[in-house]
Length: 126
Image (cartoon, rainbow, N blue to C red; front, side):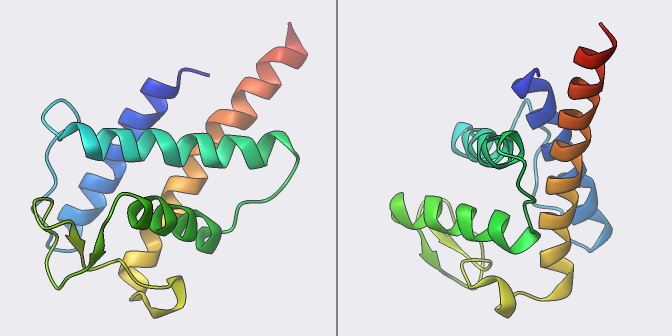
């Protein structure tokens, strides 16, 4: 699987979804800061590691993985996303997130799972 391609698609889907809920802060993949692109790649690796073991990846597990990564990098809760201060409004337990924020985890997981399934199908056909 081309992780970079999947990362780009996950990012652009998230950016488009954010736009649909009034969040215009997301930059296109090519312009996004490296910390943000790296975070997307880490999320994909998390999903793939679970999928390869035959495990389902619930959206809550995806978020908790992201939350742990951010905590390890020194991020904390803040009312507005601020990379310089390492603050993020989604730095909360999954069950405390508003539904529109939880949707991002559903979308991310669905994209990675779809690519994983397509690749598995391709290997069987060959």
